[in-house]
Image (spheres, one colour):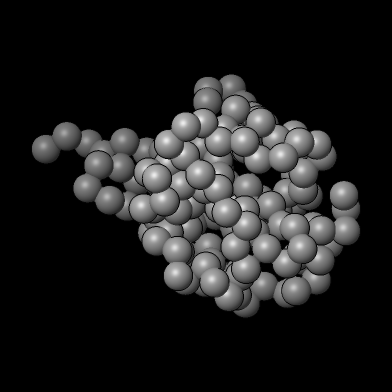
Length: 139
């Protein structure tokens, strides 16, 4: 049996007006917090900034780490590192076939989120509102 890949991935929790940015790569069938895989030689913070620039054409800044969660599927062990971020400039722009939404926290359970992202949502519900407010005020 082949050994499972170990992946380190990052995701940005970007808030605006009480909503958080989620993206879908499969025409709205499965949603996630935007981000991507860590490249050799880069920090987690550099990874999330790079991925958001590449995926959404947004310039962001990291306010602080939020949560890291482990997830295992049939092919890999994944650690998802999330960061509370803010938009420095730009507006989300997705390639064809992808989409984004500004979701209210209470509506996130209605989105078909990836398993690791669902764990983040659970903690978001218990997070202090001040954490989100700080992210929105630092614009």
